[in-house]
Amino acid sequence: MTTAQRLTLFLMMAPAILWLGVLIVLPHVEILILSFSERVAPRVYQFGFGNYLEFFTEPLYWRTFARTAIMSILVTAITLVLAFPIALYIARVAQGRVKAMLLLLCLLPFWVSELVRTLGWMMLLRETGIISYMLRMTGLADQPVELLYNDGAVILGLVYGGLLFMIVPLANALESLDPSVVEAGYDLGGSRWTVLRRIVVPHAMPGIVAGSIIVFMLTVGNFATPVLLGGKNGLWFTEQIYAQFITRFNWPQGAAFGMLLLLLSSAIVWAGLRLTRQGLGTTLRQA
Amino acid sequence: MNRPPLLWKFYIAAFYIFLFAPLVAVAVFAFNASPFPSPPWRGFTLEWFTGTAAVFGKPGVLQDPIWLTTIGNSLKVALPVALLAVVIGTVNAWLLERAQFPGKTFLAMMMLWPLVIPGVVLGISILAFFSRVANTLEDWLQMDLDPLRPGLSLVVLGQLSFILSISTLIIAARLRKFDRSLEEAAFDLGASRARVLRTITLPFLRPALVGAGLVALLMSFENFNTTLMLVGSDAPLPITMYGQMREGATPAINAVSLLVMLAVGGIASLFALTSKSQS
Image (tube, rainbow over all chains, first blue to last red; front, side, top):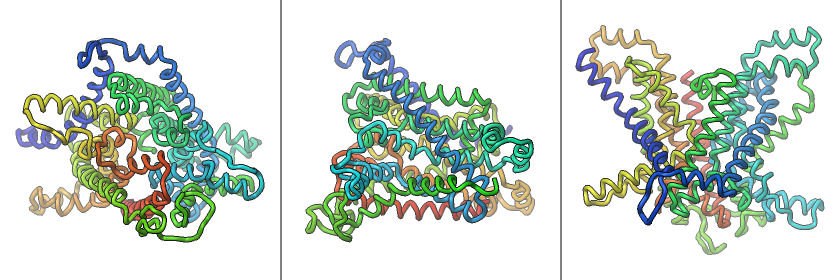
């Protein structure tokens, strides 16, 4: 390599190194260090595991963490079940214009801000909202019904937010399924259910994994949906991070929570990829 | 699977109603002549778009300095983010597709990494790191470094941290399809490096550059998680909306949302058009 080529390469690499170094790697080193520092006196910090111990000894913290993890898995599972028939229909049944239309209609709501979608659900679900009003008008309820601020509302909002990220990878995976294989399954006497379970679902596995990983990641890291739809009962772990950082100004504690969230999210991504022996790159590209 | 069962079709229909119900609710109640964004329907009005405070005691979106400032803030963030995402994304794409150097696979992996980090964690890590840098530099230089404190400049950096991954992916995918013999032909015909870039390579990349810019614009405009951790006193649109939704808002928030939906719909169809010419 000549000196000029070397210089060109170096100059072209500079933005990437700056980006990954200054905006990703160093900030993560910073919160890692921060998470292991304990305040011993005002403005005096020393190394220690106190922030992590605090997490395990204070029930509110670890319960919120466990709750966030379990509910995110539940949300992912519900999203998968709801999205599968839609993806199957788009990929295998719908043709031409209808197919393009159905896919486009799926995409549209997700180009709109998360806040706008959440506002819509709040308007539908709250005590003075549209569903409550309609129930009273039709005589199904004789007083306002509060559907907001419970776990059901949180799950509904999160599932809604995850659907697109499940449908697209699923539809992509199902697209490549050879119709003759399905035919063969029927010819060999398989019922609809058997063909679905033994042929269609295994074929869609890469899409199922990609979609599930993305939905889980988005759900665990979500903030606005659980806080706005769950209210005081939302109890999402990101809210604890926010509270430590912005409200209480206890950055070391918040940093420890951040590391735990990162760990949870990465662990699930890693497990998902290992389970199916897929690369991160191909999985992300599928989405 | 030639004739889908009726139940299946019914489910598809129900699903799409479910998908659009919240958006329709938001849009319809932007026109309700009531001080609250809830039923009953009290008649059609445009007050929540253009009205002064005369009728309902609260102004419509286009008359309200709070909403106008916050939309301005969003643009102040989204435009630099989109511009930088395209420029740096192009350089990154060149690195991934054209350059040869040790550690390239590692660099490519690193460029995907920001996409699997929760937005909140990106936000707090950048907040903490830049505070440390600002503290150190301020002691040393004896001057204030406000751009490194929570505020719009930090929001730009925070959003770039993951939007760059996406713009790089979009532009690299296009560059991969480029036929290099076109460039060689131009060189053979005596064109300079700059001229080849200007007349051959960049025109070929144009759909991806426009697409990456639009996606970056949208993602920046809508980002909430990372932005929330990095805002100072000037809030972009999602942050203001969040605040109003917690306190209970007037239908002005529906009007803002409808305007956002229309703008986003416009940008998205632009993107659909550019990506159609791409394939």
